[in-house]
Image 1 (tube, rainbow, N blue to C red):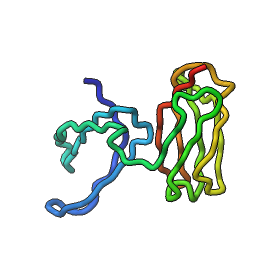
Image 2 (image 1 turned 120 degrees about the horizontal axis):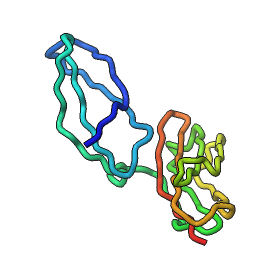
Image 3 (image 1 turned 180 degrees about the vertical axis):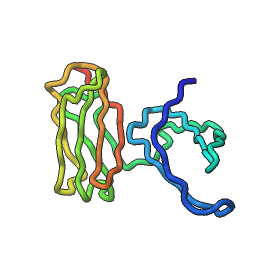
Image 4 (image 1 turned 45 degrees about the horizontal axis):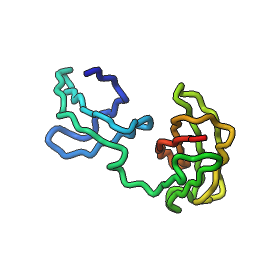
Length: 142
């Protein structure tokens, strides 16, 4: 019902010529609704159909276990994503970063200490060196 702009991509090419466009939503949630606002040179616009993208529909090479976690959570990342390094951020339900770990050596499996965190729902935000960002639900249960 309420829409907000994620970004703008400038027009390229000529009318009638197929052109590919792309835009990354770096703050995507578990379920996302998208539509395009397509603007002509004269300012007229139309909206595309709405599409739904669910995070579980995206094929990732990332796994967290155990989840729920108590003291440690093991994170496995496909080597293709991990090879250039990444940053892990754990974000609480208030949007505050409560833990951070930067990995620069291409490690694809690591154990993260979460013993200092209270029980609850968190987001594990992973930002890769190539600009790709993924968010995964992490539950801490004490």
